[in-house]
Image 1 (cartoon, rainbow, N blue to C red):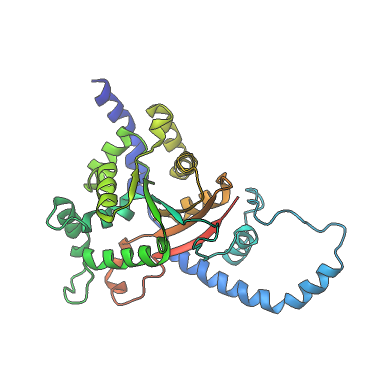
Image 2 (cartoon, rainbow, N blue to C red):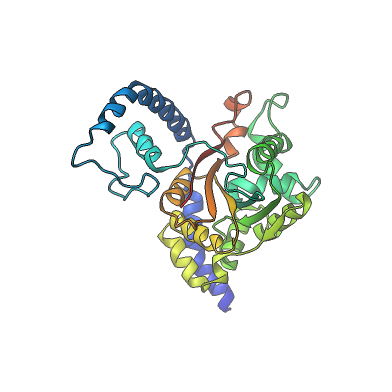
Length: 314
């Protein structure tokens, strides 16, 4: 009865965010456009900046550009200004580290599950109920059966990206659960709501198929489930930030960490506010497969739904 009671009490915590969640993927296009505009602006004022740097004023701000901006300093009047401010401290908006920290290249993937890595998990199991549920949910959205993408097609795009952009030249790859499912209650409720399997089990199986390591660490391993629920109630972005800090503790050597999520806000908050250990190079990766199944996008490029958005070291 106690377990049932906890599920009932937590159900409203999960249902509202899941039902109301709407990822504004078009914002990624705006970010990329703003970055391009900022590049042109940088070239145009390069000469002026060079001149000014040789005669600095007394009130010149010489703060460390890799230090996260405060919340007040991060608020901008427009997307272009917001992105330019982000670039002032982010170390390369789309850079990919390939052994830049020296020594063997170790990669850790913090994989969001619902609406993200549940698709590779399903696609890797031909004939499974998980794949049937995924196919029914997404492929039915497109009436054009000739030109539409299948779950398998989308998965090929995703895994090609992962092989070429994320784990290339890696001597070791470790998969972590980067989902909101940071305790058993949230795991069960999300599983029931999304009909997409048990995240810990599915990610563990996926890692085994690829020959990767799997680390099952969750916030519930370090704090009581009710405390995890309280953090979740304060916002999924806060839960994801705490999750990132918790998973950092599992890494003890130089590692390139890639945090995948289908919510840009969660990614940017983690990149901006995370306390990054000196041996970690932290990357954020936007991955939202839902728009890939929309009829109007069938023939288009998918860089906007699957992209490295930024990276940062300590």
